[in-house]
Amino acid sequence: MENAYKNFLNSLAAVKTLTNLDDNIYNQLLEPKTVLEVNVPEWEGTLVQGVQVAFNDARGPFKGGIRFHPEVSYDEVRALSAWMALKTAVVNIPLGGGKGGVIVDPKELSPRELEGLSRGYIQAIHKLVGPTVDVPAPDVQTNPQIMGWMLDEYEKLAGQHLPGVITGKPLSIGGSQVRAYSTAQGGLFVLDEAVKKLGLSKQATVAIQGFGNAGYNMAAILQKAGYKIIAVSDSKGTAVNVMGLDVAELYKHKQLTGSVANYVGAEEVGGKHCFEQEADILIPAALENSIHKNNAREIKAKLIVELANGPITPEADEILTEMGVLVVPDILANAGGVVVSYFEQVQNAYGYYWSEADVLQKLEAVMRTAFDEIWDKKAEHQTDMRTAAYILAVERIAQSMRDRGMA
Image 1 (tube, one colour):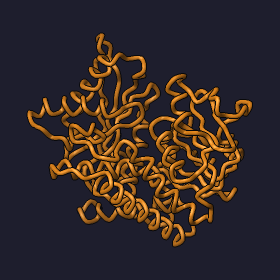
Image 2: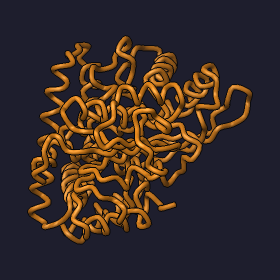
Image 3: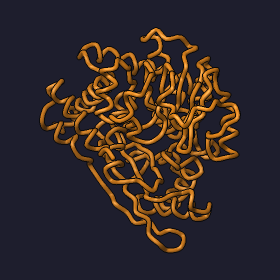
Image 4: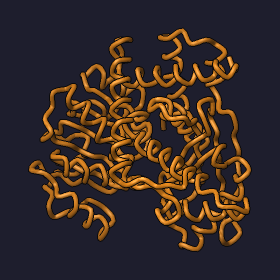
């Protein structure tokens, strides 16, 4: 498997070459600021390994999700923490980047065991997190309920209510409107801008890899906006209908069967992956490195919007650029989640909560502005959108480091 952190370092090196980034700042961005490895007791006494990485906080408190997944690794979490630092800078919110991961399959745990693990992880990292220090959130296979348990455990340890220590919480304990679908909603806003640049219509066809929270919400939001969802895949199969899939019915089918495979409203496609379908737009919404040198040339799409983190390897990126495919990078495309997490922190600090319409209006302004700024940077440097996004983010982080006297 591709080393995600090596991919980050290669992109950072490209930015240094293009922008003459000073060595002092560049060297400080090569490694995280803090790493904590932990062993968390499971319900029956066995230990589960985890890692909490705090990458850079020059622009504000560390920010990043906690994932529970059996394939979590240090390099993966380190890369995700670096990307989060870039992501918060790209959308220009006053936060840094961090990430947490636990090597566990939560599907194998009972609700009681999962709660014990969630509380145990917070007990292990609580000295490194806080509303003005490091603010975790949900990620792969974690959710608002897990955040609720973590918040409760942190507040017990702190002896006071501090709702801003965790985002992505249930609404009843300080969560924000829109947060449940914010990643997808932010993705729609930047997808709309890319569609305008390419001259595509809002009836453009879409293929989506991944039908979890982000993928399902993206499919539903796009369908409501007029786009035609013709292909959806998950880890077990693919559903295709060139006339358009019924997203709500497909979701019901997955809830009943555990997969989009064998959906009655789909055509027989002989097991082909959604990457191979004749769609105008492709949205990878699963795990890292899904698009690589061995499958990149199978892609027919004109536009790729990275709703997942790191779904395209550097080799595949080069191939897609040669093919003339416009890629909206993850550090912009899926930043809606961290933007609304920031809004949640602001609301927690105020003790005053906004309506869904207010949050959507604020999110749209941030995402469309960020797209325009990256597009301008792309034109300035005559490069691709990913490199332009990295340049914009690193310039902002570097300026904060200089203003703090760190360089």
